[in-house]
Length: 508
Image (cartoon, rainbow, N blue to C red; front, side):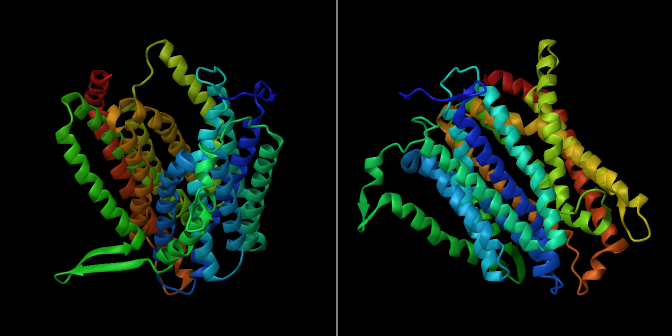
């Protein structure tokens, strides 16, 4: 319990604005690096290799899977040992180191940097949002407003970073863009550290037990073992990503072809599926209904994010090779979705409230179905762009912007309610497990995206062949297939929505 008078700013705990600033710069650094990553690998790092697209998609997918998997461990360590302050600070330090290491032009530093960034995200991402929540007492009417302010910080960083870092990367060199992302994260780190020193967080975010952290193991305190162990994981992760391509054969047939990370995730998903089947047979009838509802939502969200996250890989290359860009670099197009989120988030929230007042607010199953339908239509829009290409195979940027607009409307139908509904609908004794599945699904979406990217990869001996009408045809055909699948699954979800709505009503 907080025992001190906490300073306020604009009617909110002052600590909120320190966290807002730290998260803004963390998102700036994350999305700035993400915007450049695929382009850097294809156009610079692997430019002389025919399979450069496939390699880049594999690395991007491995990075994405691990980035979304490590927060589960980071959250546990914060809850049981470190507390929110130390976890956020440690994550920010790893992020800062990772971005500056990424600015050094050498393959060893490239993979090492990805390891630092993955570990940093594990400590930072799950705990800074929890820190915001801890600033408000239960029932505080300012809580929703505070999270709205914080959410805006996330998207301001995500919107501006790709544009600025992309501009630096294109005009001055990739590593200047990576370095700018590092400066952004260092800024956020210093602001957060200053807030802890000035006491703006009151008694919030402290470790559960300082005595436990001061306990020794093999002659060193626990609080030092955690960062040491995290650093030790960096080369392991770097090795898995750098030497991660594997192919397993049995009976003369290829049984698996992909990355080590992807293979591990496939085994993990298989194990989870077996456990889910076993649990499904153990629980009551009502709890089975709850599990069906949660798993259906998780499946739809996995497919949605698998398609959505192609913006950072496949669609970035499409923008680079086949879009007549206006006002944006190819890397900068990664900021378009965040710009739309900033513009549309508050109006969408107001629309849902207005519809609720007249009993027309769609229930969650319908919103999830709409989300998939919209992202499917978005890819169809991209497939139609081929009919408007110029002689060099470049299409008007309007198609990319229109597709991203549809993506974001789909996101606003699904993402804001997803976590809330998981905690609400999951059986009480399985809430934590089902939350774990939800985050595992987001991570696994990158595996699916990597598979899609490899399927659509433009692999040639001459980099110049990866542009023009040949690459446009590959992309357009792929977009049509993705759109067909997304739209088909979305329409199926729409048909099943009344049943799922009834199921949701029964489990409440």
